Length: 222
Image (cartoon, rainbow, N blue to C red; front, top):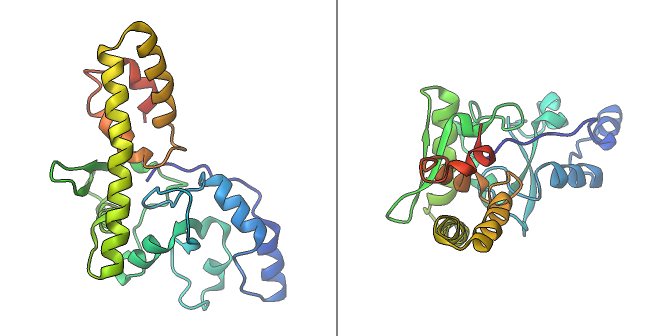
């Protein structure tokens, strides 16, 4: 999870729905604006090229009974079907961080541990950090059904692939020839951009190793 800059004004279809008493928060303009703002990524797991695009309410609208939340542009997030399903638990109705208002990297350590499992830890002792860390870990590790097991493993495998690219480029930056170092730095600028898939994990990895790569500090600063 990374900081997202939400664009304004809100998509016009939301105001139109409110005026006519409708409940459609998935208008074409809403989807287009969310995909643009969230760089085509699920705001939770950060997988891109979503096969199942969903509009997720950060705070639940309780089966459309809470209209203030239902059509509130600030409450709509781009999500994949898998993560939306994982988040649909009572324990996540409150306290999940709004990544459009708070930088998640300020409160979370997003890592893949040595055993190959995702482990997101809170950096500060607040309900927001603790609950969000638990939710993000579950998005990669909640394997209580066969479908979720496949969905989780797919995300872990793709995260591993991105980290492998990162490791290779860091090696080139450290030990390559000058042209190789320059190419690696250009690639790393892309990998560490918040728009890149799994950027929260890639940026955490580099930030924890800035003693070895001080030249990358401007790319991962909070």
